[in-house]
Length: 413
Image 1: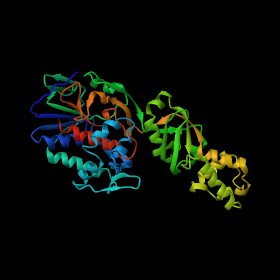
Image 2: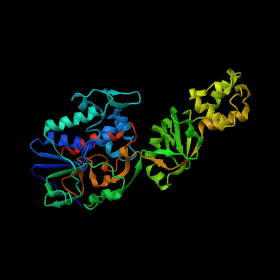
Image 3: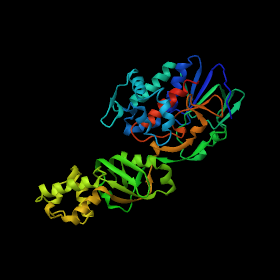
Image 4: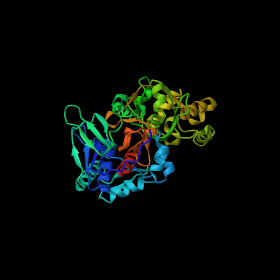
C-alpha cells in the first residue's frame, strides 16, 4: 500500500513505551514540535526499567566505535538499514547528547561506554529531566492494546481501563516481545511480523564437568557451533550452568534463529588460545617443550591460561599434572593442541535473563521507511527501538539503535 503525503498540523503525539527508545523519541518529538502535546504511555509502574538494570546497573549507554561500517556489523538483524540511519545519529552524537546535559561518559578498553558515575541512574535522571524541561507528559499503567485509523488520526484503545484517545502522530517503542501474540495488534494494521525468538542468551551444559570451573574468564577465545558456519570471539566466562561472556552471547545473537530451530541442543567448539592456525600453536608448544623441558606441565601454563582451566584441560587430555614438558612426546603434543584449539562441549538448553531479554524478530523492516521510521502501511505511525526486527550484540549496541531510531522517529517527518 502506498502512503500519501499527509500534511497535518501536529498537536497530539503519543509515544507508546517508556523505555530508552520511547523516552528519546519523546524528547526529540517535543524539541522538534514544541507546541505539540507529547505524551508517553507506559503500561507498567516503572519507567526506563531496562536502563536501570543494564550493564549490571551501570548502563552500557553506547559503544565507542565511530566507523559506521564496523558499527553496523554488530547487528545480526537490521545492520544494513542502520548503516544509513547512523549517518543521521551515531555513537559520537549519543555521547555528545548526554555529555552536553551533564552526564560525563567514559570509554573502556573494550569500547563499551558507561557514565563516569558507573550508575545507570545518571542516564535515567538525564532523560527524566530532559522530558520534564521540555514538557513531555507521562501516563503510567496505560496499556495501549489497539490502534485504529480514523481519517488522518490514530485512535489508541486501552481496553476497559481508559477511554480511547485520538492522536495526530504515534511512535511505537514498546520494546521486544518474547511472543508473537504481543505483536498481533501491530500485525492487525497490516505490518509484516518476523517471529520473535530469544537472542543474547547463555549456553547450558548440564552434563559437562567444565561447570566446576565457574567464575573463570578467558579474555580471548574463539567459539563456533559444530556443523554450522556460526562463529564468535572475545571473552568467555564459565558459569555454574555452562558458558557465557561476550563470545558466547555474540554466537547466540548471530545464531538466534538457527539455534532455536535446533531446539538449543548442539555442540560448541572452543578455541581457548584464540589462534586459528594450529601449526602456530604447535610451534609455540614445541618451543616450550624445548626451552622448559624440566618444568612440570601443571606449573608452566601456555598462553597464560588460568591455572584451574589449564589443570582441567590437562586432565581432560589424560595428561598427568606432574608429567614434565620434555616427556610430552608427539602423542601428548597432539592431545594438547586438540584440547586448546578444538575443545568440544554439549549444549542442552539456554539461559535468558528475563529483565534484560533481547529478541530476534518483531515488526519487519520491510514495513518501515528507515528515512523517517514511519510505517509503510499506516500513515502517521512510527517505530523506534527493539519492537522492530533489530538487535545487536553486547557492548552498548542495542541502546545505540534505540537512540538512533528514536532520534529519527522523533522528527515526525
